[in-house]
Every structure is written in structure tokens, then in C-alpha cells.
Amino acid sequence: MLLQRGIVSDNDEYLFPVDEEFTREDLRSFINYHRTNYEEQYKDKLREYKGQTKAFDDEIAQNMQDHNHLIVNFPKNLVDTLNGYFIGIPPTIKVDDQDKDKVLQAWIRNNSFVDKLAEVSKQSSIYGKAFMLAYNNENSELKTAVLSPDQSFMIYDDTINKKPIAFVTYGKNAKNEITGTAYYSNRADSFTYIDDIRITDSKLLVFKGKVPAVEFFDNEERMGVFDPVITLIHAYDKAFSAKLDDIDYFAHAYLFLKNFDLTEEEQLNIKQNRLIVTKNASGEYDVDAKFLEKPDADGNQENILNRLTTMIYQISMIANISDDVFGSSTSGTALAYKMQSMSNLAVNKERKFTQNLRAMFDVIGVQVPYGEPMDIAFRFTRNIPNNVAEEAETAKNLIGITSLETALSTLSVVSDPKAEITRIQDEQNEATKNAVNNNPATDYGFVSSTEEKNDTEKADTPSNKQGA
Image (cartoon, rainbow, N blue to C red; front, side, top):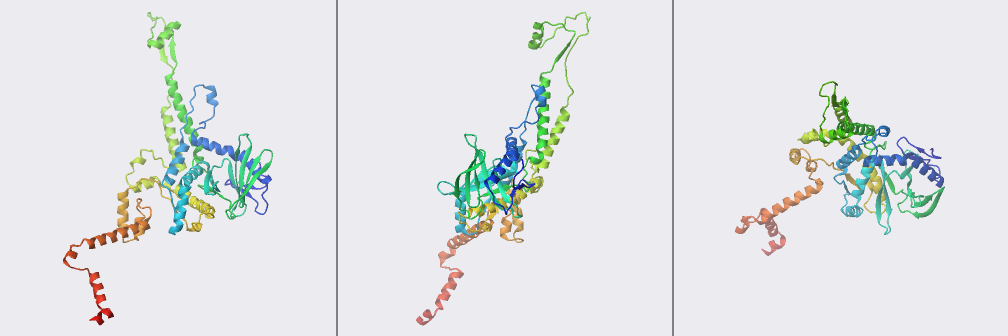
């Protein structure tokens, strides 16, 4: 199905001519296109993540009633490993101005924004993209919601800047009718869609000409974490299922009896008592009893499973943290080397998320007075085991070569180097004060050089000289 007006880019972006008016007919056209071409595709990705999809076609299962369908949930493992590494430690979002930062932090806590950010990160890794919507609840409080792309999409203009024109979210009600909301820069139109779009309600928005939603994505191609390896995952499921089939075959192997004439009762006795008695005492007949066996492919199966496992983690660029070799890393350098590919993936995701977050806070800043979007600093900390002793040695060696703030920034236990420097100075001042107060010399009438200097200056004042 084609759009009546507008196009879809190679990166799955919906584009609409900037010099034309977006109408209800255009909205209907985009909804139809999304439902036809993308809705089921995104739902399939969610089923892959949940482990609810079939590993391969049912052709063999139709011929063999006892065929196994095992699913090793690689998609969930890949997505959760990357996001645990990327955002398992909540990112720091702050501004330098203390008063404005208090306002910002209060809003972040009240809105559970860190949890929303973790959810949008997970969904963008599953689907390739996800959306965050800003809205005002019934108490006029500014809130945010995370929406998946299976029933929501953003429409941009076709300029090089790709400015958002509308954000659309829809679903089906109890009557199986399509209902939804289209958010524009100045209003939000609620609609129903049966044969045509009918606007049921329209509310003005107070976001100063900004569409109150932002698209989050890991990469420009909008590819999910397991998209490049989905065929390898299905091949693994198929090979693993075949391995279990062989085990089942061994447990239910056929017994071949040659030149045996057994009654039904005697056959049952073989099964129950595990005993076969031949009546061919004279040796007149060539008798034989054995199980029918098919060739053993266990070695080949293990090789292909190991190769597929390696390729899945290698192509997806996700570290296999359950690997025995991975657990043998004793130094921070060795651990960093093994996680280099996933680190590269996380760095690129961080760049995109910083850009997306700045756009989101540009919308939020209309109602939360924290300052300008460029005033916000975002800091993402990788969630990895740290060798604190090794980090302390590094920081110690850097003192005198770099600034104290740079040296402290190498310590994973220090989240804010500037604040740590302030605490160090406060502790030093307190220690100096305690040392002076506890100095035994004060009990014998001795004074410090500072006190002596103050007394001298006091004695030299004109009033004291006149009095003398």
C-alpha cells in the first residue's frame, strides 16, 4: 500500500511535503500505511523478545507429531545485556545553576524519569526506535509516557532538518474501532477511524510550537539489537530442537527381532521384565535382537551450535558475559578489551540518546524552568565490574600530571569529581581547625603566628598610639 502524499525514507522515517497542509485524509493514509507495512512487523519483534515465536516452519512438525520446537531466547538476552551495560547505572542529568538544578531534579524524581528512560532504551533496542510523549495530566502536572512504534509514529517534514509535523498514536477500543490522538505543534486531536477520520475532541497544547514527542533510536537505520542476527537465532533454535529429537529417538528406538514368533503376552513381557526368551534351541533359525539406530550426529550438532553461538554474539556486537573465557579476565584492561565491541555500540547509542534527550528537554523546558536545553549535562556511566584498587593506582599516578578533577574522574566510586574536591577541601579545613584547637601549646600561653600578627596590627593602630 502506498501513501497518497508523503514518502517513507530508507531509514523508516515518515516524511511529508513542508509546503503542503496536513489534512485528515493524509492522517488516514499514514495510519493505513503503518498498519499494513509496520504494525505486524513490530509485533513480531516483541514476540521474538518474549520468546513466543516459533523457531522455524511447521513443515516437519506436520509430518512428525512428536517433533520438538525449542526456543533459546537470544533476543531478550542481547537486549537486556546491552541495556544493563548502557543504562543499568542511572545517568546523571543536571545543570550547573544550583537553584535551577533543584527544580530539574524534583521534576525527574516526581516523574520517575530515570525509569522511563530505561524503558525507552529497551524498546529502542527491541524495535529499532521508540517514542517519549510529554503531556499534562488531570492535575495539569507535566508527565511523560513511553510508546512503542507498533501503534504510534512520527511524521516529519521533508526538509534537511526533518522537523516534526505530527505524532500519532492509535489503538482499538472495546467495539474494535480504531481510536487515537494526533499531536501537532499547537493542538492534540482525538479521533475515531471507522470508514473515515472523525475528530472527536481537540485541545490546545502549551509547548510553544513544539510537537510534544521525541523519537529515540539507537542508530540512524532504526535497527534493533537482534535484527542482524535473527536468521542465526532461528538456525540455532532449529539445530537445538533437532538435537532433542535425536535424544527422543534414542529413548524410543525400535526393537528389531529376527525369526521370533511371539504372542501378544510375550511381547508385553519383554517390555515389562526386560527379558527375551528364544524358542530356537536347536539353532534351526538365525535369530537376532537389536535396536534400530540412525547415524550419530552429536559431534556435528555441537559444532554448529557452538559456531552459531559465537556468530550471534560477534555479529550483534554484544559481549557473551556467561562465557567461561569472559569470566577469566582478571584486569580492567583485559575486561575492557573483551567488551570493546559492545562499548562501541554503547558509545553510538549514547550519542543518539544525548541528542534525543536534548530534544525531549527542549519540550519539557517549556513548563519546567531549568534553563536552556544546552545547559543540561548528560552523563552515562557503563555498568561494568570495576577494579577499584587498579583505578586508585591510576588516579594516584595522575596527580601532579593532570588536574585533581581529571584524576578523580578515573575513579568509578566518584560520580561527581567537582563535588568530591569540595568535600576533600572541607575535610582538610576541618582537620586543620581540629589540630589548632587540640594543640597542647595553647595550654601554656603560646599563641599562633596568626594571632601574634593580629595583636601587632592592633597595637599599631592610631588610637592605640595616642593612648600610649
